[in-house]
Length: 388
Image (cartoon, rainbow, N blue to C red):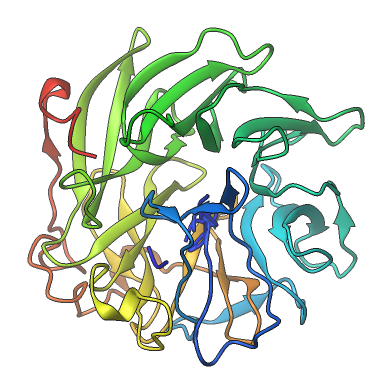
């Protein structure tokens, strides 16, 4: 996404989404000079944006609007709140924020409440939090050990524990349905492609490489993982893919959303596994996504799990990023429509009642976005390993 996730890591960021969590950095003439960034900084000053690129990267300011009714869930006027995730009961949300520090920490609050609980307070950056399936633990990415690693905290109390170690940057954890494993993306300092890895949560053992890609999300229905992957190594034309684990081995990489001109990034599953939300970034290699631009566009989209019935939920004149579904189907994301990056939500309309009559900018690959276009395209694993 822009220079996302995150979280990000978002649009954030490593990614805040920019990553994202995407990780997401923000810069430009309309942004106050003292505004802090909710973006991951890998290896000290180095950052990783939502395209997986390193360096001193930032992104355009956001001007957010929506085609569906919105609710605002955080209201910081200092720093930024990004990378939201909602617990399995749909009662609490966890997010990363720079409201009290120039480096993001993790916070917890009830969906409809006002009080905010600070979960971490560390000189390092803590981003991309993800609730465990039982809602008792939170996995997140942090550079507190030097490089980015996956860490874990218990909401019942106790010390923060480290799950991954080593010189590689490991970000964007996502839990298996059973809560015993995590998938994440990793980039070695000795090679450029981002890789997808799975590890056991208990002790970080049983690490297994499963493919190339960014920002993986484990399906709640079983061993299917959604992720973003570039059409060619080093490019920003990302598509949304899934892979299936058969006896622990990755099989049948399948492309669900793609575009000749835009980037499709940051996929996330609905709680019943029937839908995927993602972010569409217009002309990701163009001037609009460079620092200082105020014309960048990124929208939240949904589609069915087979890649059909694509619907644009935001209006094409804003930057929306870091989507995360709640149990009731409500979709949470980050927007600066209030003047600062805060967490908002909307309820997608199923059945095409609000289906967009547009497409991602100039995209024929997505076809008739509001209909059943974009049928999945399977690709053998051996043919895609060098594509990211």
